[in-house]
Length: 146
Image (cartoon, rainbow, N blue to C red; front, side, top):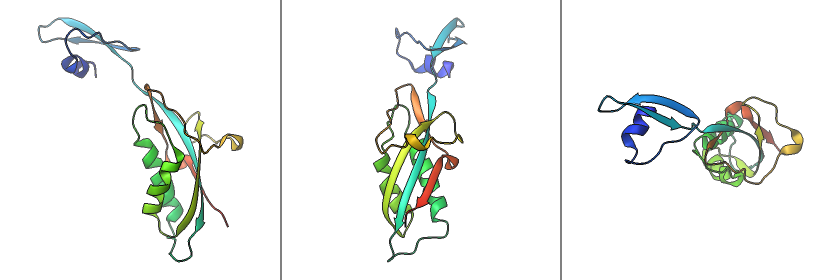
């Protein structure tokens, strides 16, 4: 990482961060390169849905919903907020037989941790410029509402 930062940074720009590497420049001189790696913010997701009786809901529909939600959030990138309502389109596009969808999210300490029932929210979670959202299938709860 340090070599690539040194190779691509503009001349005269100071490199800072909480990780430091010593690299050797093209003239054989040691150079100190510092950078900060973005940190994950683990997001738990709760998807509640109703069925649309004019379409067939697949037998693996809930597994698809988990995978779509986890993939969507984990692909957002550094500094991109998690907006629950933006998951609705990808879920509808991936799974037939779904009518109404409600998405709630919360931050959890680590992937696989149990979400707090009182912390679910339908509002965005802000992600700082030094972090990225991460969700795994295990962090997505899917429940059918009758």
